[in-house]
Each structure stands twice: as structure tokens, then as C-alpha cells.
Length: 198
Image 1: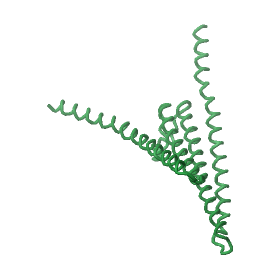
Image 2: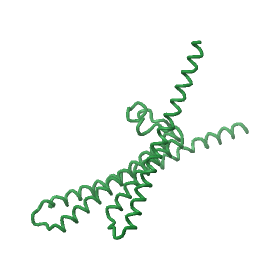
Image 3: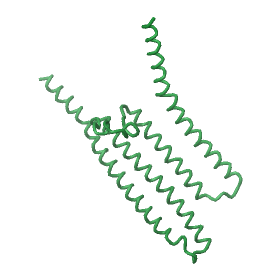
Image 4: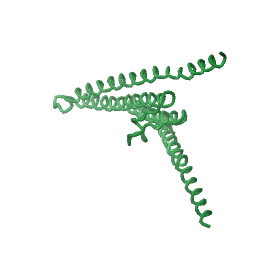
């Protein structure tokens, strides 16, 4: 009897992981919502550009349209990146807690987006996309901000430098991470082959 209760409880406990499906579906729905909102904004921004070449438009109005267009484009990139984060999060949660996506594993694009084996893999992929969102946000604020003093230019330069350092460290971690371990494995196998050959 005790064994039956233990087995039943462990089975229920293990199957409770399917609650993650709620978060997966909600993340996909949120991503679709963000895609819809951003796409509608892009369509309206393009519609407003139809009068940009009109000779009747003043230079000040044309400048305002240009600035608004740049802002809308940056906001669109930011929104699409956010939707991408939600999709990656949903796929990662499903792979970690429910089941492997066999269809994705057979796709060539899976290695670029998916193949999430641990929570660290999911965090790393999310961190890279979130970093890109922060870069886009910085660019958006830099476009909108009017520099009125030399100190503000120094702050902007420092922010750009920090972003560059963050991107460098991110790509540095990629080049010295899996690649380095792969190289180490290759050297290990080479040494083993030489030892067997001798």
C-alpha cells in the first residue's frame, strides 16, 4: 500500500510539469499580440510617408516626419525582438519541461534558434536577445534626445562604449566557450590517437 501511494504521488508530481504548457501558450499568444501591434504601427508609419515627397510640405514638417519615421522603425525593431524573446522562451520551456520538439530537431534552422538542453542554454539565448533589445533602446533614446551640453555627449559616448564592451564580452564568451572546449576535445583525441599509434 505504501509503495502504491508513493508511486502515485511521484507520478502526479512528475506530471505536474505539464503546467508549464500554460506559460508556453501564454508566451506564444503574447508574441503574436506584439507582432500584430508592431506590424500595425509599421503600416501606419509607412502610410504617413506617402506625403513625404509632396512639394507643399515644409522643411520643418519633413524633418519631423523623418525623425518620427526613424523612431517608429527603431520601436518596430524593439517590438519584434521582444516577440522573438517570447517565442524563444516558450520553445525553451516546452523543451525543458515537456518534450523535445522532434520537428524542430530535424530542421536546419533549429541549431540557430533552439536546441536548448539546460536552463543555462535558455538563459544564454534569452540574454543575447535581451541585450539586443537594450542596444535598440539606447539607439532609440539617442535619436530622440537633443544634446545641449558637452556632458550629455560624454554620457552618450560612455553608454555606447559600455554597449560595445557588453557585445564584445558576449561574443568573447562564445568564441572561448564551446569552441575552446571542442578544440580541447580535438587535442585530447589527437593525443589519444598518437598514443595508440605509438
